[in-house]
Length: 192
Image (cartoon, rainbow, N blue to C red):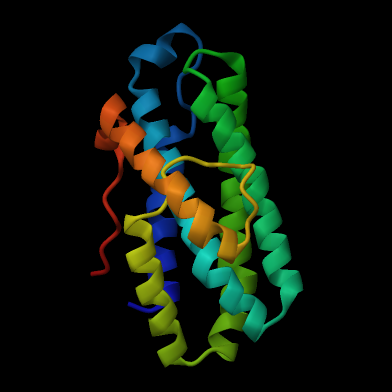
């Protein structure tokens, strides 16, 4: 699968989660609503998505188009990771949790629009079908082993993520298995 098809399917899944989370209950009803499970799905999906983009997609964008587009996207992603960490650290019903959730949904929609409307047309013009297929294969393989938590203090550098990030990913998967959070891991999107 080519990189843009893979990322498009990931974006569709995340946008579906955003729709589910729009108007999510807050206050005392939030804990009983199942909100935490849906937000865990979001944290896992977005943590994996951003990690593999930073390892494989943004370096290719830098090589093909230049730094400024990738820098803006990574800046958005870093802001998103900080919001995801607030969600990871919080609980439904906490005011900060709901504020972070709404901020993340708005930022996430803005970031997806930036990627799809600004970045992807330039990537399609600059990279061959073969190059996009190669990146897509890396994204698919990388997602299976990607971190499931945001790690906002890890530098968004491909080399760092391929080394230190792999250790963080292993620890995330172990923590998920021990805590039962692994059951919240959303399935990878399938292209039809």
